[in-house]
Image (tube, rainbow, N blue to C red; front, side):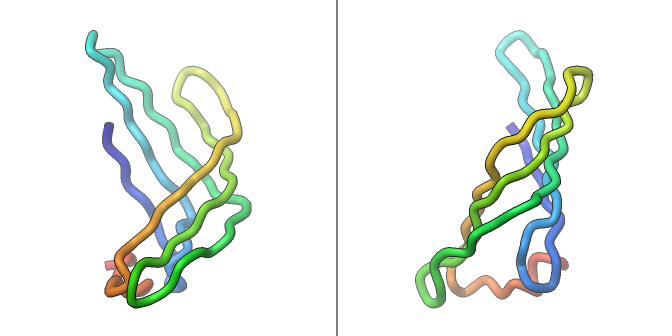
Length: 82
């Protein structure tokens, strides 16, 4: 499994791309666009968001699901855009 994300200056994830490869080599790729989120945590421990997203799954169609990501409290939101 691999993933990447696109973040705003506020640290909110705007989009994510995920890829899964099973034991037989079949690859499934999807791109998620967040449409709602709730922030959680805070410095110095951790911070992040959980939210809803629309996933466009290559060759299969569209569905909705969740997005969840958390960072150590020392990670600044603006650094995610670097």
